[in-house]
Image 1 (cartoon, rainbow, N blue to C red):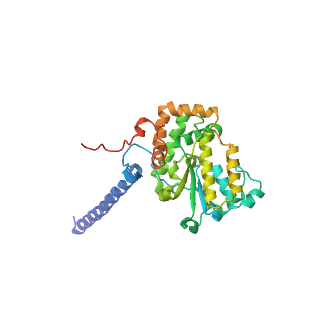
Image 2 (image 1 turned 45 degrees about the vertical axis):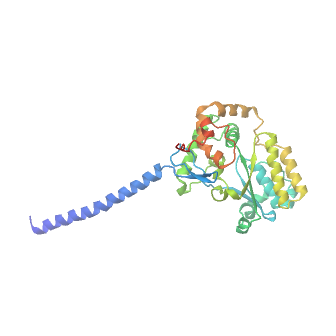
Image 3 (image 1 turned 180 degrees about the vertical axis):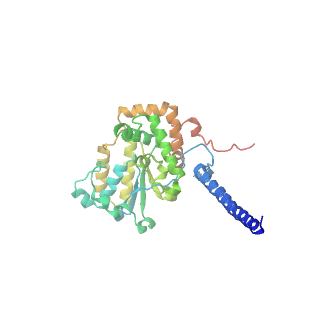
Length: 328
């Protein structure tokens, strides 16, 4: 074989070798990245009792603090802002803040604090109402408030309203096991692909843990949290707390009284806490092991991040089960 052909074969082998090596390295790096992205272990911490607790690999929970787009409402004249968390008095929140944003217009348009989402409110198209300014956010006198609701109570309300009433829960209809499975998988997808910033669906927004709202991942300590419940007394307590906040911020006594009276006198069209359907839904939530397993995985961290009573959870989750026993 001529020496020129030998050199050509040698050069070809060298080029192939030079090509294969970086391709292999690149494939290995890409494969490692894709594996870590798609199957990465959950690594996150939560501050409990002033200490960071590492939850790496503990259970298969939905993680806390996966921030989603939230509804903020502003009443700049009173240095007040709020966040409407779905299925947690969100209608009352937007109506109250719309009133405080422009009292004269709200009353002139004959609005009520018990109006539903279908009512068109002029305030909702106002950018100054929907987006807090930097001055408001940085003002130490600004009050932030949000109603928060026991996560399982909130789920029951979601289930009755969106699944039983609206039939808007995927293909589940009123099958609660199907509903909790779909919620879990949808939230897991948002959690695992947060870098892609996927847009939450209508159901994602309603079902997302409380900690995913209001930029709580950044400034939870700045918020006044109004605890609400299903019965009239708990509802009354949270409304009275809101009244006290309004008074401190200079809202007139007449307006405070109007908010409290209308809020306590009427129930919104969404309200489900007195229905017989709720009793049946609560029974299944208490007794169905499949439903309970999913609810613990979805909402467990809400019971840690916020000061909710954990007595309605299974015995294991009422304890600090993640702690390593101290050695004697």
